Image 1 (cartoon, protein in one colour):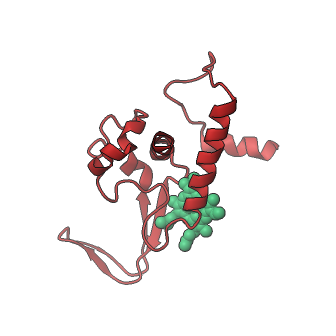
Image 2 (cartoon, rainbow, N blue to C red):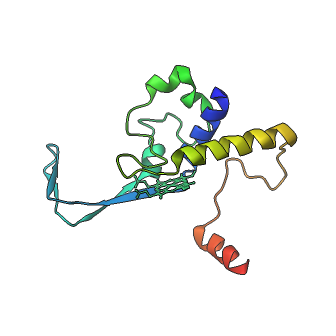
Length: 140
Ligand code: HEM
């Protein structure tokens, strides 16, 4: 089970479905000693994907390596650099449910099926452009 959890965590790091989160400043806010002040009412978008692929926090960031999330490596993770479900009081309310169903479905599938690469399998994975995906959805 720790390895299954690590696989899910690493997949959500590399291929997080929600690539960014946003917040609107409730009041003027100066960020530390940067001299940057976010004025009240401004929308601030934060790229989760950029954080998850930052080599300062994840060596060889494009490599799928579940070992990063094994219990004996967890203390190497830097707080606030992993946030597939967002963070803070408005983070994802469905997180526990989503993780439970993902792990259940994965365990069920690997238990009953054998997964193999085909000649069409791209390694590393190449993602379909969102516009193409939307077009596919429209055809359904
Ligand atoms: C792998 C699956 C999922 C991922 C990666 C995901 C990710 C996220 C992210 C990044 C946010 C924004 C959090 C923030 O702004 O800090 C969010 C919000 C939210 N998610 Fe999910 N989510 C997933 C599944 C689900 C499921 C299964 C449900 C419901 C059953 C759900 C319900 C919500 C709701 C209601 C919010 C808005 C929370 C708020 O604004 O207070 N999510 N999710």
